[in-house]
Image (tube, rainbow, N blue to C red; front, side, top):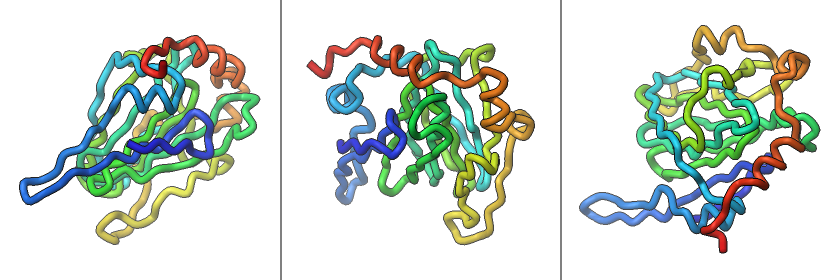
Length: 209
């Protein structure tokens, strides 16, 4: 497995080694030692989720209160999605910026987003199936969102599906009424970079030793 830190500190693209022959293919989707070596701490799995999305569906930008927030290790088992990480940490040098990784059933890459970051993706194919490993259970009272079409964040969402057909964003009713990044900051919903750094530094690590 190869880990590459994205332009947003605290987020990594993970590229697995694909072993295939006439029977099919095998890959390791997660391994604790390279994870700890890259991130500096262990991944404490508390919940695993699966979502299936039609082409054009956008989920996010979602984030959780710090502490404990919810780190995510995300893979696409079928189809393709553009997975996006947004820096929502007030005081971070990259605050308001974003980066992305194409997750699909060809290269089988994954993305890891540590605590205190915003997460979103757009499905590029009907039936795109996304698997999430989460460091904390879902907590509805501590979950928040930012509008994925916020012009200040300016995510360059794809306009063409995997099959070449036109693509338009399809949002949930909840995401449609989500605040902008500026509104979320004004409301005191965003974590500070200092609080996130302190929490991440407190996470246990045994595999990196």
